[in-house]
Length: 305
Image (cartoon, rainbow, N blue to C red; front, side, top):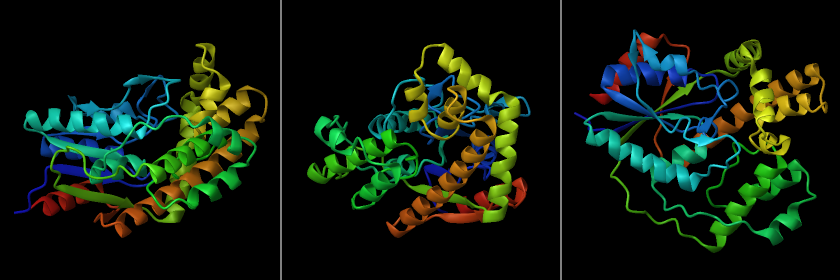
Protein backbone atom coordinates (compact mmCIF):
# COMPACT_ATOMS: atom_id res chain seq x y z
CA UNK A 1 0.00 0.00 0.00
CA UNK A 2 1.35 3.40 -0.99
CA UNK A 3 1.95 5.86 1.80
CA UNK A 4 1.09 9.49 1.12
CA UNK A 5 1.03 12.26 3.70
CA UNK A 6 -0.02 15.01 1.29
CA UNK A 7 -2.58 15.16 -1.48
CA UNK A 8 -2.05 17.92 -4.03
CA UNK A 9 -4.78 18.91 -6.48
CA UNK A 10 -3.73 21.33 -9.19
CA UNK A 11 -4.87 22.53 -12.59
CA UNK A 12 -5.70 25.64 -14.59
CA UNK A 13 -8.38 28.11 -13.64
CA UNK A 14 -12.01 26.95 -13.95
CA UNK A 15 -11.18 23.23 -14.03
CA UNK A 16 -13.01 22.30 -10.80
CA UNK A 17 -10.16 22.05 -8.28
CA UNK A 18 -12.10 23.41 -5.32
CA UNK A 19 -15.02 21.02 -5.73
CA UNK A 20 -12.75 18.00 -5.96
CA UNK A 21 -10.54 19.12 -3.06
CA UNK A 22 -13.48 19.76 -0.73
CA UNK A 23 -15.09 16.41 -1.48
CA UNK A 24 -11.74 14.64 -1.17
CA UNK A 25 -11.26 16.29 2.22
CA UNK A 26 -14.62 14.97 3.36
CA UNK A 27 -13.85 11.45 2.11
CA UNK A 28 -10.26 11.27 3.37
CA UNK A 29 -10.50 13.21 6.66
CA UNK A 30 -8.52 16.05 5.16
CA UNK A 31 -8.03 19.77 5.51
CA UNK A 32 -7.32 22.09 2.60
CA UNK A 33 -4.26 24.31 2.25
CA UNK A 34 -4.84 26.88 -0.47
CA UNK A 35 -2.04 27.42 -2.99
CA UNK A 36 -3.51 30.51 -4.58
CA UNK A 37 -1.53 33.74 -4.52
CA UNK A 38 -4.64 35.95 -4.30
CA UNK A 39 -7.02 34.01 -2.06
CA UNK A 40 -4.88 34.98 0.93
CA UNK A 41 -6.43 38.47 0.82
CA UNK A 42 -9.45 39.43 2.89
CA UNK A 43 -12.18 41.27 1.02
CA UNK A 44 -11.14 39.85 -2.37
CA UNK A 45 -13.67 37.06 -2.71
CA UNK A 46 -15.44 37.17 -6.04
CA UNK A 47 -12.44 38.14 -8.14
CA UNK A 48 -10.21 35.45 -6.63
CA UNK A 49 -12.84 32.73 -6.96
CA UNK A 50 -12.79 31.64 -3.32
CA UNK A 51 -16.14 29.89 -3.75
CA UNK A 52 -16.39 29.64 0.03
CA UNK A 53 -19.78 27.95 -0.17
CA UNK A 54 -18.10 24.86 -1.63
CA UNK A 55 -16.29 24.23 1.65
CA UNK A 56 -19.50 23.06 3.28
CA UNK A 57 -20.81 19.69 2.07
CA UNK A 58 -24.08 18.29 3.36
CA UNK A 59 -23.86 20.67 6.29
CA UNK A 60 -20.31 19.60 7.15
CA UNK A 61 -17.69 22.39 7.04
CA UNK A 62 -14.30 21.63 5.52
CA UNK A 63 -11.33 23.18 7.34
CA UNK A 64 -9.27 25.50 5.13
CA UNK A 65 -5.90 27.21 5.57
CA UNK A 66 -4.18 30.21 3.91
CA UNK A 67 -7.42 31.84 2.82
CA UNK A 68 -8.23 35.33 4.17
CA UNK A 69 -5.02 35.67 6.17
CA UNK A 70 -3.83 39.17 5.17
CA UNK A 71 -5.55 42.44 4.29
CA UNK A 72 -6.00 43.55 0.70
CA UNK A 73 -3.26 46.00 -0.16
CA UNK A 74 -0.53 43.86 1.37
CA UNK A 75 1.89 42.14 -1.02
CA UNK A 76 2.09 38.55 0.18
CA UNK A 77 5.03 36.61 -1.25
CA UNK A 78 6.34 33.09 -1.86
CA UNK A 79 8.68 33.26 1.14
CA UNK A 80 5.70 33.84 3.43
CA UNK A 81 3.68 31.19 1.65
CA UNK A 82 6.32 28.51 2.19
CA UNK A 83 6.54 29.42 5.87
CA UNK A 84 2.76 29.34 6.25
CA UNK A 85 2.43 26.09 4.27
CA UNK A 86 4.85 24.30 6.62
CA UNK A 87 2.97 25.60 9.68
CA UNK A 88 -0.39 24.47 8.26
CA UNK A 89 0.99 21.09 7.18
CA UNK A 90 2.37 20.40 10.65
CA UNK A 91 -0.80 21.57 12.36
CA UNK A 92 -2.99 19.31 10.21
CA UNK A 93 -0.81 16.23 10.55
CA UNK A 94 -0.56 16.75 14.31
CA UNK A 95 -4.33 16.37 14.38
CA UNK A 96 -4.06 13.14 12.44
CA UNK A 97 -5.69 14.59 9.34
CA UNK A 98 -4.55 14.64 5.71
CA UNK A 99 -3.25 17.94 4.29
CA UNK A 100 -4.70 18.64 0.84
CA UNK A 101 -2.77 21.31 -1.07
CA UNK A 102 -5.03 22.82 -3.70
CA UNK A 103 -4.52 25.67 -6.12
CA UNK A 104 -3.26 26.97 -9.41
CA UNK A 105 -0.31 29.20 -8.53
CA UNK A 106 2.54 27.16 -9.96
CA UNK A 107 5.34 28.84 -8.04
CA UNK A 108 3.57 28.31 -4.72
CA UNK A 109 2.82 24.67 -5.50
CA UNK A 110 6.35 23.87 -6.60
CA UNK A 111 7.91 25.70 -3.68
CA UNK A 112 5.79 23.70 -1.25
CA UNK A 113 6.46 20.37 -2.94
CA UNK A 114 10.19 20.82 -3.50
CA UNK A 115 10.98 22.44 -0.16
CA UNK A 116 13.63 24.81 -1.45
CA UNK A 117 14.78 27.34 1.11
CA UNK A 118 13.19 30.61 0.10
CA UNK A 119 14.50 33.96 1.27
CA UNK A 120 12.82 37.30 1.61
CA UNK A 121 14.00 39.29 -1.37
CA UNK A 122 14.66 42.97 -0.71
CA UNK A 123 13.76 45.69 -3.17
CA UNK A 124 16.42 46.64 -5.71
CA UNK A 125 15.93 50.37 -6.47
CA UNK A 126 18.60 50.47 -9.19
CA UNK A 127 17.09 47.52 -11.03
CA UNK A 128 13.60 48.95 -10.72
CA UNK A 129 14.80 52.22 -12.21
CA UNK A 130 16.40 50.38 -15.13
CA UNK A 131 13.16 48.53 -15.85
CA UNK A 132 10.71 51.34 -15.16
CA UNK A 133 10.04 52.36 -18.76
CA UNK A 134 9.90 48.92 -20.32
CA UNK A 135 6.68 47.41 -21.65
CA UNK A 136 5.11 44.29 -20.21
CA UNK A 137 6.21 42.35 -23.31
CA UNK A 138 9.80 43.49 -22.86
CA UNK A 139 9.71 42.58 -19.17
CA UNK A 140 8.32 39.12 -19.89
CA UNK A 141 11.17 38.53 -22.36
CA UNK A 142 13.73 39.54 -19.73
CA UNK A 143 12.11 37.23 -17.17
CA UNK A 144 12.41 34.27 -19.53
CA UNK A 145 16.20 34.70 -19.66
CA UNK A 146 16.56 33.60 -16.04
CA UNK A 147 17.13 29.90 -15.51
CA UNK A 148 16.07 29.64 -11.91
CA UNK A 149 12.59 29.15 -10.58
CA UNK A 150 10.56 32.33 -10.94
CA UNK A 151 6.96 33.32 -11.22
CA UNK A 152 5.80 33.83 -14.78
CA UNK A 153 2.24 32.66 -14.21
CA UNK A 154 0.78 35.71 -12.44
CA UNK A 155 2.81 38.27 -14.37
CA UNK A 156 0.21 40.37 -16.17
CA UNK A 157 1.19 43.87 -15.05
CA UNK A 158 4.54 45.66 -15.40
CA UNK A 159 4.79 46.03 -11.61
CA UNK A 160 4.40 42.29 -11.03
CA UNK A 161 6.83 41.54 -13.86
CA UNK A 162 9.44 43.86 -12.38
CA UNK A 163 9.06 42.20 -8.99
CA UNK A 164 9.46 38.76 -10.59
CA UNK A 165 12.66 39.92 -12.33
CA UNK A 166 13.86 41.41 -9.06
CA UNK A 167 13.38 38.04 -7.34
CA UNK A 168 14.99 36.08 -10.17
CA UNK A 169 17.97 38.45 -10.21
CA UNK A 170 18.40 38.11 -6.45
CA UNK A 171 18.40 34.33 -6.56
CA UNK A 172 20.86 34.33 -9.44
CA UNK A 173 23.39 36.00 -7.16
CA UNK A 174 22.20 34.39 -3.93
CA UNK A 175 21.57 30.75 -4.90
CA UNK A 176 20.20 29.59 -1.56
CA UNK A 177 17.95 26.84 -2.88
CA UNK A 178 19.18 23.87 -0.90
CA UNK A 179 16.66 22.01 1.19
CA UNK A 180 15.49 23.78 4.33
CA UNK A 181 14.46 22.16 7.58
CA UNK A 182 11.29 20.81 6.15
CA UNK A 183 8.71 18.12 6.79
CA UNK A 184 9.28 14.93 4.85
CA UNK A 185 6.65 14.91 2.13
CA UNK A 186 5.26 11.88 0.34
CA UNK A 187 2.84 13.66 -1.98
CA UNK A 188 0.27 12.28 -4.36
CA UNK A 189 -0.10 14.97 -7.01
CA UNK A 190 -3.25 14.97 -9.10
CA UNK A 191 -3.81 17.37 -11.98
CA UNK A 192 -7.16 18.15 -13.58
CA UNK A 193 -6.73 18.11 -17.34
CA UNK A 194 -9.28 20.04 -19.34
CA UNK A 195 -9.38 20.47 -23.09
CA UNK A 196 -8.89 23.94 -24.47
CA UNK A 197 -12.43 24.40 -25.81
CA UNK A 198 -14.09 23.40 -22.55
CA UNK A 199 -11.67 25.52 -20.56
CA UNK A 200 -12.48 28.55 -22.67
CA UNK A 201 -16.22 27.91 -22.31
CA UNK A 202 -15.95 27.64 -18.52
CA UNK A 203 -13.82 30.77 -18.24
CA UNK A 204 -16.35 32.78 -20.24
CA UNK A 205 -19.26 31.39 -18.22
CA UNK A 206 -17.53 31.99 -14.91
CA UNK A 207 -16.61 35.57 -15.78
CA UNK A 208 -20.23 36.31 -16.65
CA UNK A 209 -21.29 34.75 -13.34
CA UNK A 210 -18.78 36.77 -11.32
CA UNK A 211 -19.93 39.99 -12.94
CA UNK A 212 -23.51 39.11 -12.06
CA UNK A 213 -22.48 38.28 -8.48
CA UNK A 214 -21.07 41.78 -7.97
CA UNK A 215 -17.43 41.73 -9.05
CA UNK A 216 -17.52 45.41 -10.01
CA UNK A 217 -19.06 46.34 -6.65
CA UNK A 218 -16.38 44.32 -4.83
CA UNK A 219 -13.60 46.27 -6.53
CA UNK A 220 -15.44 49.56 -6.02
CA UNK A 221 -15.74 48.77 -2.31
CA UNK A 222 -12.00 48.14 -2.04
CA UNK A 223 -11.31 51.49 -3.67
CA UNK A 224 -13.75 53.22 -1.33
CA UNK A 225 -11.97 51.66 1.65
CA UNK A 226 -8.80 53.45 0.63
CA UNK A 227 -6.91 51.02 -1.56
CA UNK A 228 -5.22 52.87 -4.40
CA UNK A 229 -5.96 51.97 -8.02
CA UNK A 230 -2.27 51.11 -8.41
CA UNK A 231 -2.39 48.58 -5.57
CA UNK A 232 -5.44 46.85 -7.05
CA UNK A 233 -3.96 46.81 -10.55
CA UNK A 234 -0.95 45.05 -9.02
CA UNK A 235 -3.12 42.00 -8.28
CA UNK A 236 -3.86 41.58 -11.98
CA UNK A 237 -6.72 39.93 -13.86
CA UNK A 238 -10.14 40.86 -12.43
CA UNK A 239 -8.79 43.55 -10.11
CA UNK A 240 -6.66 45.11 -12.81
CA UNK A 241 -9.32 45.37 -15.49
CA UNK A 242 -12.25 46.29 -13.25
CA UNK A 243 -10.11 49.03 -11.70
CA UNK A 244 -9.27 50.33 -15.16
CA UNK A 245 -13.01 50.44 -15.85
CA UNK A 246 -13.85 52.17 -12.57
CA UNK A 247 -11.14 54.79 -13.19
CA UNK A 248 -12.59 55.49 -16.66
CA UNK A 249 -9.61 54.13 -18.57
CA UNK A 250 -11.70 51.34 -20.15
CA UNK A 251 -15.35 51.14 -21.07
CA UNK A 252 -17.37 48.30 -19.59
CA UNK A 253 -17.29 46.43 -22.89
CA UNK A 254 -13.53 46.88 -23.23
CA UNK A 255 -13.05 45.71 -19.66
CA UNK A 256 -14.98 42.49 -20.22
CA UNK A 257 -13.31 41.75 -23.54
CA UNK A 258 -9.75 42.39 -22.35
CA UNK A 259 -10.29 40.59 -19.04
CA UNK A 260 -11.59 37.47 -20.75
CA UNK A 261 -8.55 37.40 -23.04
CA UNK A 262 -6.23 37.89 -20.04
CA UNK A 263 -7.82 34.98 -18.14
CA UNK A 264 -7.42 32.68 -21.15
CA UNK A 265 -3.75 33.68 -21.38
CA UNK A 266 -3.35 33.10 -17.64
CA UNK A 267 -4.77 29.56 -17.91
CA UNK A 268 -2.35 28.81 -20.74
CA UNK A 269 0.59 30.01 -18.61
CA UNK A 270 -0.60 27.81 -15.76
CA UNK A 271 -0.50 24.71 -17.95
CA UNK A 272 2.95 25.66 -19.22
CA UNK A 273 4.16 25.84 -15.62
CA UNK A 274 2.65 22.46 -14.71
CA UNK A 275 4.32 20.80 -17.70
CA UNK A 276 7.55 22.40 -16.54
CA UNK A 277 7.06 20.89 -13.10
CA UNK A 278 6.90 17.47 -14.71
CA UNK A 279 10.12 18.13 -16.60
CA UNK A 280 11.71 19.15 -13.29
CA UNK A 281 10.91 15.75 -11.81
CA UNK A 282 7.52 16.27 -10.15
CA UNK A 283 5.16 13.45 -11.18
CA UNK A 284 1.57 14.54 -11.82
CA UNK A 285 -1.27 12.03 -12.24
CA UNK A 286 -3.59 13.70 -14.73
CA UNK A 287 -7.31 12.97 -14.62
CA UNK A 288 -9.97 14.25 -16.96
CA UNK A 289 -11.76 17.31 -15.57
CA UNK A 290 -14.86 16.23 -17.50
CA UNK A 291 -15.24 13.04 -15.46
CA UNK A 292 -18.02 12.94 -12.90
CA UNK A 293 -17.12 13.85 -9.35
CA UNK A 294 -17.73 10.24 -8.33
CA UNK A 295 -15.27 8.93 -10.91
CA UNK A 296 -12.62 11.45 -9.83
CA UNK A 297 -13.04 10.48 -6.18
CA UNK A 298 -12.87 6.78 -7.07
CA UNK A 299 -9.64 7.46 -8.97
CA UNK A 300 -8.17 9.25 -5.96
CA UNK A 301 -9.11 6.33 -3.74
CA UNK A 302 -7.43 3.89 -6.13
CA UNK A 303 -4.26 5.98 -6.28
CA UNK A 304 -4.11 6.04 -2.49
CA UNK A 305 -4.15 2.23 -2.29
